[in-house]
Image (cartoon, rainbow, N blue to C red; front, side, top):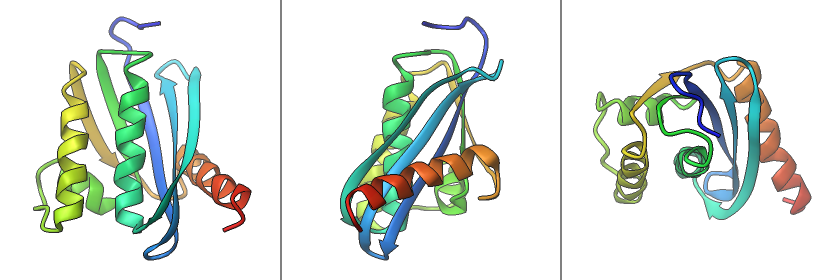
Length: 141
């Protein structure tokens, strides 16, 4: 199901209970017309919040390929992730550098990918956060 020139919007979040601690990712894929095409979350073990944020983006971009190959806009409440993905901030941490490289590789599957920082109060980012917390609650963390 690929929608011509319509953008696919991706809202992501990563959560860590403790930093580092038990962590999860969540994301939502939505077409510009408002159609929610996929929601997903997953437990990723003990890690930091920043790594969980990157895992959310990597997994979302991987899944997005099932629905679209054109223009994609990724929204996150992680200023660090967005500024690093835009190339405005350097990636100093070796573990984050590896995830950053993987995320960059995933962006090459699409015609164009933009990253935008949004507040955590954004309704779709809040839903991605709920997905993370539901996954962590399910695991009793």
